[in-house]
Image (cartoon, rainbow, N blue to C red; front, top):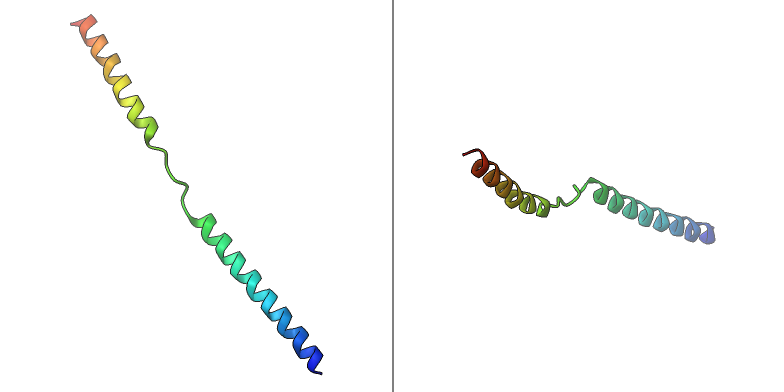
Length: 59
């Protein structure tokens, strides 16, 4: 009887660890992906240069 109790306790511990792992995975999937704003800082000067060139040609 005691052996069965120990076996069940081991199973409970395994399930608790599995639940904790699944919760951790769920939290990781809920996190939004970090956005990469560096591309915007590259595009702003390029667009400004192009607009300045167009304005100097037209004006």
